[in-house]
Length: 225
Image 1 (cartoon, helix red, strand yellow):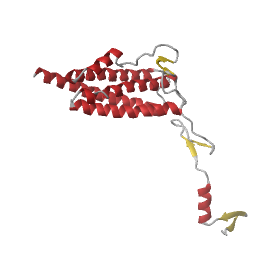
Image 2 (cartoon, rainbow, N blue to C red; image 1 turned 30 degrees about the horizontal axis):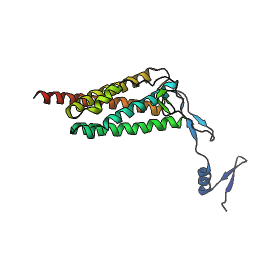
Image 3 (cartoon, one colour; image 1 turned 90 degrees about the horizontal axis):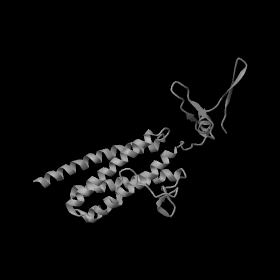
Image 4 (tube, rainbow, N blue to C red; image 1 turned 180 degrees about the vertical axis):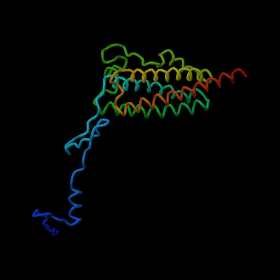
């Protein structure tokens, strides 16, 4: 049994507990939950019953994620044609990079939507060509038309290389338009995960556009020789 000593100071009893007992009492107390204050304001200690909640989102956040999933899916479909349509090593390397990164981003966006109880698609259930209002599904900015995709599938070799690069540059520029529209919408893009994702996507797309423009210039120079 732990013992304690009692001291009297000015007639007031003071209990002195062994250090082991104090450590046990300290360890058994729940951790403090502290909410940072605004600039210049003090922090606030919250009760132990406090539970974390997801930050508020705007309809534009949901629409951006749903639209970008569809946008990314077409990019992955385009890269899937590379192995059977060209022997260009630069394109094989670029295609693998785009496919891997955008497939990973699709999974992230699906998790983000699912965690918030939102549909993973903008389309009507069971009717992928219709949106949820019953209207024909519109393409996201920069997405290739059905005719462009058909031409890409039918091409081979240098022709495929050219159509792929010009098409993917168009596609990437469309993604930049989507990111800008998100951040131009009042109240949108405030979620930290979404903000980081959209910012990273913007940077990645810009870098890959430069790579593809360089490949087009290289291809043009080779054809002139």
